[in-house]
Length: 107
Image 1 (cartoon, one colour):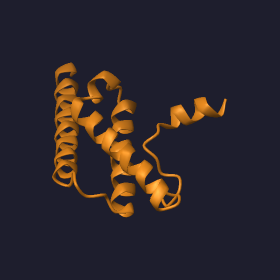
Image 2 (cartoon, rainbow, N blue to C red; image 1 turned 45 degrees about the vertical axis):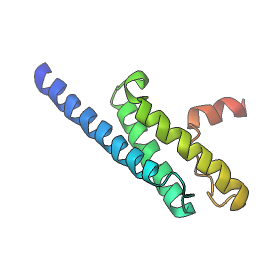
Image 3 (cartoon, rainbow, N blue to C red; image 1 turned 135 degrees about the vertical axis):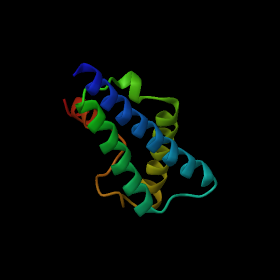
Image 4 (tube, rainbow, N blue to C red; image 1 turned 180 degrees about the vertical axis):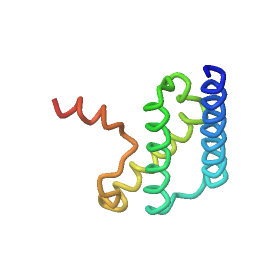
């Protein structure tokens, strides 16, 4: 039983890593281009949801916070800042900022 759960988690982590690699490669291929606001909003939602889903499954942050994930997070954060200046808040509340961090700042 343990072995089956371990294998299933291993497969899900492989999926997570390959998904993050695809996103990172896609962003790297477009390094010189600013993302369209729709692309940015979609990527932020995808990356945050995937990360949170794996956290909820008990995967440690240290496992999820790979160099690839950090590269994606940094790029999307820069794109978010650029969009907020040029689009005048066109992200409509969508942000790479963690909801945990938002709660801490409200205190």
